[in-house]
Amino acid sequence: MKKVLFIIPELSHGGTNKSLEFLLPHLINLCTISIVSLQDKGVYEETFQPYNLNTVGDTYIKFKKSIIYRILNRFFQPVSNFLLNCIFQSEARRISKLINPDIVVAYQEGEATLFASKFNQKKISWIHCDYKLYRDIVTSMNEYVIYNKFNHIICVSKYTARSFVNYYPQLSQKVSYMYNVLDIEKINELALYNVMDKRFNVTNDSFVCISVGRYVDVKQFDRIPSIVSQVMSKGISKKLLWYIIGDGDEKLIKYTNEEIKKYGLENNIVLLGAKTNPYPYIKSSNLLITLSKSEACPYVINEAKILKVPLLSTDYPSAVELIGKEQGLIRSISDFPEAICHLIEDKEGVYTKIHEAAQKNNYINDVEMLKDIICS
Image (cartoon, rainbow, N blue to C red; front, side):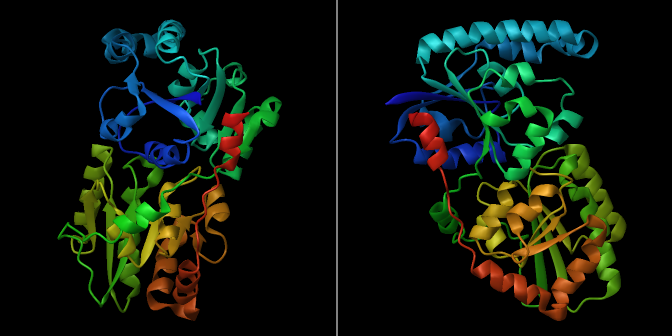
């Protein structure tokens, strides 16, 4: 059996770690798996422990937390980059001796990819983001030299692959795409659990919307109070309830709560916080809504498709690819109030149509490409 080492940036909640959690059972009989995290604490520590979980050495962790790093990274970035590369080079040698992998997989862009590039073994890079947005927000650095060291580059959607190749057309022959793997049976099983949070209150005269994800700017959860206020002003026949599952940026959460109070929507919008098992909440909702500015392959959309819940999404490029024309609506966020009103009132049978399409959906995992790469 080949030894495959996955490198992840952290052990916290997030779509990337959830994706890896669901992927690994498909590979367990094919190879020996190890995981190295760049951070040493998080909720996924227990989940990944059976897969020979290790962390990088204290040198990296202490360096990233130090005042010296923050000063260098802000004012003398070439120096901080040089030191980080030195640390990663040393750690790659240490971990190579410890694990002796045949294949190294950088399971997220950024530092996980930089670290994986220091290994001499066959390498796979996995991109879970819209690379254009990553370059606009995270780093403007040309990463061609880093990615050129990899044998394969896997993206999580067609759009993600196109976005990456637009920056590095020279690497197009290495690039392919594979949608996130989901544990379909487990998701359906977990969805049958009782809802434990008493704040989640579904009644016959209510229309329940739900949004799930990290509380970060790109998700635009802070715009929900304004949208709900506009819907309410139009007059609807059912009570609109909108639940938000997730944690993250405390300033954004505080601002959203202030907006809820400003519009007097405390009985309509509830921030439930993070949930270990969000599936009963999703399954009990009438509509799952994503408001993101951009997404690569949002996990929650595919989870909703498995649970046969209708969808409303903003019009980022991969939305059309994932939702299609029947399983949900794709609209500009400025058109959300009108779209939600149409769905609640089922004008022209619009909600009935996407609800019926959702019931017919069958999500299929496809990991054969990855198996071929590992076995080749």
